[in-house]
Image (cartoon, rainbow, N blue to C red; front, side, top):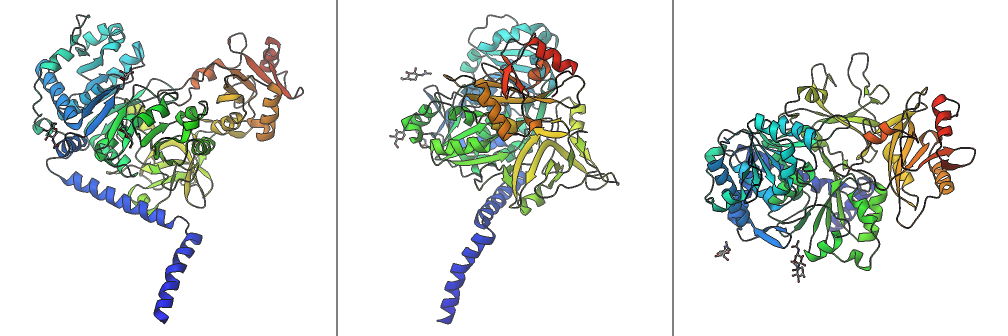
Length: 619
Ligand SMILES: *[C@@H]1O[C@H](CO)[C@@H](O)[C@H](O)[C@H]1NC(C)=O
Ligand SMILES: *[C@@H]1O[C@H](CO)[C@@H](O)[C@H](O)[C@H]1NC(C)=O
Ligand SMILES: *[C@@H]1O[C@H](CO)[C@@H](O)[C@H](O)[C@H]1NC(C)=O
């Protein structure tokens, strides 16, 4: 009897105590279990001989369930077997009509369509790394990106033929073989390819084509746009691709799920997470050419979509659409992505119902990632000692003014304390490698940080400022460079833009710092778009900004735009805005100036401009 009582008491008390003192105990345990499972799968796959690559997982899946739907696209459906056969045909056509050898790179210039997937599969089967060219870029930029990875073959969608025609002489000089996905090609220097694929054999590609590959071999090149300069080609190794298989599976996605893939596949989110992640689970992909806020939920309903992906501002766009009665009528249970800000997160859940949000942190070239498996609003992950042991990382004190890590008298970095913002650095190891950028040793070196905690050690510099709270949640604070200093204070652009977009007539706000002659640092400026049917109320804008932001963080200038320009990954573009500054004779958009005396934003005039740049106006 006594034993029973004690046992019962323990059974009741322990969970209660755990809940109080370790509120996330069970979630942490479950995460740990998943992490161990992933690592074991990864390690056992890495031991297989011949090598087991991401493409082998696809071949395995299509052998296991050939008739399951792999991808749905504009009313067309392709099973795993269809995709397997189609990729064999492309590969066999390439063998017959090009001199592409295993290990040589090919470039893919194509929008989101099933052929993109099939072509990647084909090239992967042939043992060729693939460079994903952004289909929005043209001329010099396009040529630069193409040249980064020494590709011998370029495969392009027919609608992009004209873009290639522009750079044709340069391609010819390099001896590049250009295939266009069309039955008849109008440009004589290019070769039509669809006709060749149609008649090619669908017999499987021998594994021997992949015999030279190692886990360090490049698998794909993904271009990342930095804040400055031309895009860089981040080399994604075979190891990385193998690890990427786990991303969706480890977040509870299974074969029964339907995944909505509308992010560009030439980027990490679309390709590594959406496409490669789905292969592991054996799920169905609903593919779309591009993201559309107005079609989003109708398509989710039409296809019974259960998993959605987001990046950057995507969920904000969904929240900005007019409210509908059927907003919560859908089967979406999981949203996975990164860049979701806390207030949009709340709004999204309130509006579209109980969807599990898995916000994660990762970068194309980086070697560490986190996932917020608890659903704590605003966090990008959680410190887990086990994870940290395998992937050693740290937040180190950072001097935003000098734009470099703070070092002690011994020349080593200093770990930031709990609650303090620091730069994320992660140790470069065999399982957490940093391959760097193709043909760009200088940029690769710039991302490496030495002598961090010991003389001679080597870390990857993420360029991201994070913060860890007392409960061990990790928060994104800023990208190095997304902060500017004014009057000796740091201004975080994301924070200001969150405040400005709280105003009902402001749809979006892009915040940045601009230089004023005779002043240190940069003064705040916001490029905003106005909500449809509303108008700028400059007095209200002033009082809102004044009540929520310290004086140094208040945007001194407001620029009204019809739309906020974003990058392919839906991140706001700032570079041009910063360069254009606040000169009313150069900028045609309406400009406003925060006038402390008027307690309002007043239209910017040439006189105000002169007073500001000559130092006659007190800022
Ligand atoms: C797939 O479908 C084909 C044709 O409908 C059928 O002959 C075949 O048995 C199916 N395969 C499996 C594994 O269900
Ligand atoms: C898909 O089919 C529907 C109905 O049959 C049609 O209205 C729609 O235009 C089709 N969409 C595309 C992209 O072909
Ligand atoms: C979606 O689910 C409903 C009910 O479960 C089913 O009737 C319908 O056929 C499904 N639609 C698709 C496209 O799978």
